[in-house]
Image 1 (cartoon, rainbow, N blue to C red):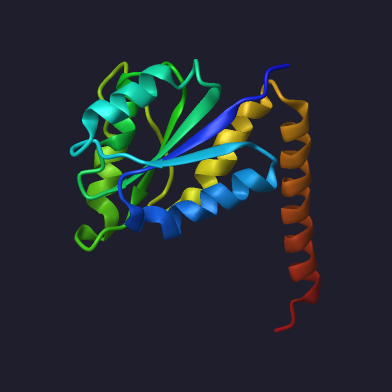
Image 2 (image 1 turned 120 degrees about the horizontal axis):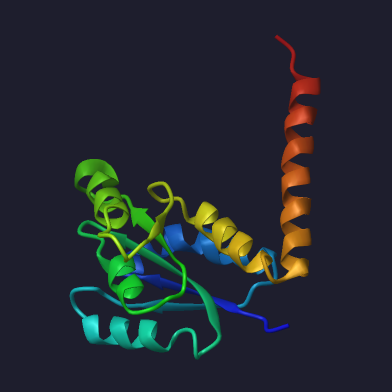
Length: 162
């Protein structure tokens, strides 16, 4: 069984505090992660080359985080058949709505799975779920995570006093 890694690409180093949640969650599933900074507008050739070669370089999923115009996920998706997950980053303008719309409103044929604004942890979980289709170890870790979430809610309910 081939073990795939996940690429986490951010448009700017200022995105790292949000993106770190995805990196940490992927590592908790023992999924290899490679992180880069690329810009859809400032380094489009680099982004295109990365996407064109990502599958051959052992990646199974690409996560792309960007704010404002947020075209990074779409540029990457245009140049690969790998699943691309977009994380719209909350920027100083429009509270991230501009990023959300730029990430989610893709033309037919160039899908980008999009999580919530600053939803890096869900991006990592979605990437893990995609890889778990062919990796039982990741599937087991997802099952354990969901079980822990369930038990946490039950415990909180049991401890609830009003």
